[in-house]
View 1: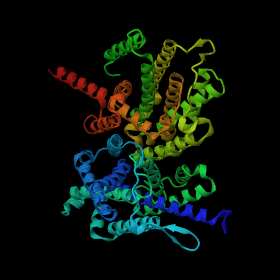
View 2 (view 1 turned 135 degrees about the horizontal axis):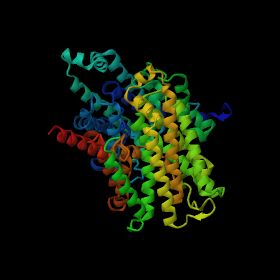
View 3 (view 1 turned 120 degrees about the vertical axis):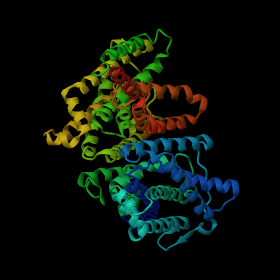
View 4 (view 1 turned 60 degrees about the vertical axis):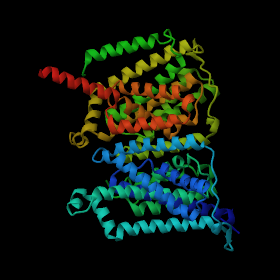
Length: 294
Length: 317
């Protein structure tokens, strides 16, 4: 069987790979969108936090034999706490200034994290085993689906939906959204805005850490894994419309698929296709697909 | 211009230092590398410091021009000045393309779009047949200037680099102090006012962007001729970050700040690279963080502000 002249197994395989990548784009750009929405900070350290999440899981396994499922909870917590510390120590001093300073500061933090891990672990990758429960593959009849990849896609969609629900449908989310509009007024209603901001950054960081743990069994855990990914995620955020939660999820998944399909039909362009899409979208809609025009 | 007497003295002192550097025993290749990056930082500062646009994609102009120049000289046998010219022209065209896409957005949007566009250039350089992929372009000969003056010796090359650097530095100062430069400053300070006064703001910004791209390209092209190679690290986004750091550290919007910043960053990298390994990235990151938190004016900017305060105090007394 062939689809568009490509053996269907290869076609569906790349599509699946695209969906998995898209799941990571969605989770990471979601965290960026949440942080940008409330703090007005473009979190350049997001890729580094993702990398720290993967390393945290790997270190826990190597040192203390902590299994995957526990790491899935603990590593994001560690990264979340790191995020809270970053907010308290550094970002707190930049509110009210040009958002460019936030971008530059988090860029510096990314360099620090990445350099420290490179010094400690080198650039060669560490491998993290796929948990037993999810090893192997399922034969769907028309394709062989590795279980772990299916789990990653489902887990990330669940996380994205959960975050969307939290922000759009709960009281806490209403405070968050109100805080992005007018922090002073929300504060006047007795909401502890600084606390909320701190926890938001922590939660965004934890999301990046969670993506890192999910990625660890699929890719090599290396200090460079975040910096390679973060630029694509930035492009996703720009295409989706900055700060738009729905935009980042839909665009993330969609672009992963587009990238996968490009890999089938014209592999040389698969690395740049996201940026090409970005240019086209910006020509037509300068505020991004889901963005409000600024 | 403020501190005009002091500025003149500083310039003369630096000029003397530059001309005498090889005699003082400074390693010429190091100083040339430093000057190339200083030029890169000045080009970047023309955009950020005097127009208020933060480009996070300047490595694309620097690195792509480095490749183009290297390719023309090595594979086509062009003389160095023609190779460099080709690099500059290509960088300017690339700048026009980037600018056309990005200029409509502001602030961080602008920064992220330029970053993504530059990443596109990075992947093109990684995969295009003429760039040598992961290995980069190695062994680019220096050749002879206009087919006459051999640049093989470091001394000859050095004085050419110094001449180019000084010409560009003065050129940038001229641009900034010209009426065009005044319009750019107005756009930086208050864009809506510039619009309401009838200036076609986007065209000014685009021109500034193209000029900055061309100069960044010149820096990259010159670097290829000096060092004899162009590699992926020239066009990688961390290079865009580095040039931001140089400007920020020295003082955004000051004439001499970026040169100073480039000096500090390149010296640090050269001095520390073989001693502390990857810690050099950490150290640069720490400098970045400290700059953003505490010295947003940069070394030169803080110095100027301090002199202003002192002057104000003496006048009061």
